[in-house]
Length: 322
Ligand code: HEM
Image 1 (tube, rainbow, N blue to C red):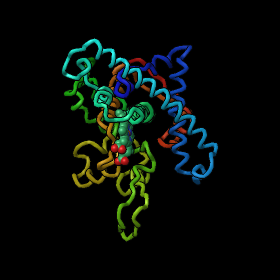
Image 2 (cartoon, protein in one colour):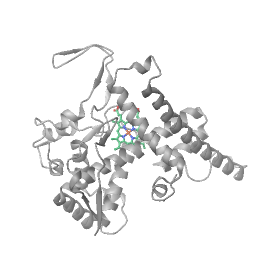
Image 3 (cartoon, protein in one colour):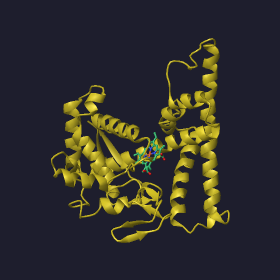
């Protein structure tokens, strides 16, 4: 994700595997997690932080400062890199820096967005990838680790359609069971329990409830996706329920509307396709090489909702080489 946000790999994974991890990256990761936790806490507490600099507020401020300061450094580095390229290609009238156009290059080159907005936007892109995608993959493998038969079914689909070959757009389009596993994970553990929030723009009536203009309403992902009215045996991890033909089309459509991890409408997730592709690729690459188990003490793990669903205790995986 850092490639999308900052035009380069910043080395999270390599750093974590080392005995002396890069302290700045460690701080960046820790601050991103803390930032998210505190945003979550702020939703569920009395907002005294609006009146006083409470502990929650000052901790949030520190985490946010760290995140934006480090992000700004990466954006500055990308800007310097572009300037250097511009000097090299001086005389070119195209106004383009090098061959490749990226989001960051476009925004810098375009010159209309103030730097702090660019930093903010790129940080939001990074947050989406670092926190959400990695947490999602963890939950998916936690569920697959408890359902070895589903994991084998998924592995077989990957083996039959891809084998050890590189993944292409075409092969990605032929993996219905993988997509069903992803959808079912989103249903079973919605990444954001409350779901998307919207401010009602005019007085509205829904099912006899009067909702005054200006009220904040939440979608209630968790309630809908665990509702027996829409899902048989909602506690069970059953990717099969999402396969074509499992239900009649109107029911299938209703089920789909109960599980909206990326939101809906004009302000839905900008990174959805990117996130889905990352998830599909990561799942394929892991399953091509490993059979994944969880340790027995992890079966009782429950999602604890901060901003996103995080495990209430660490999950330990065992990766058995195939
Ligand atoms: C599993 C991964 C992800 C989930 C579950 C997720 C979920 C969401 C949700 C629920 C929203 C609010 C949508 C609404 O209010 O209707 C959102 C917004 C957003 N997401 Fe994601 N997201 C994910 C990954 C990503 C990634 C990887 C990126 C960037 C590459 C990203 C960028 C954004 C941005 C920029 C917005 C704000 C859009 C706007 O306000 O117009 N997300 N995301």
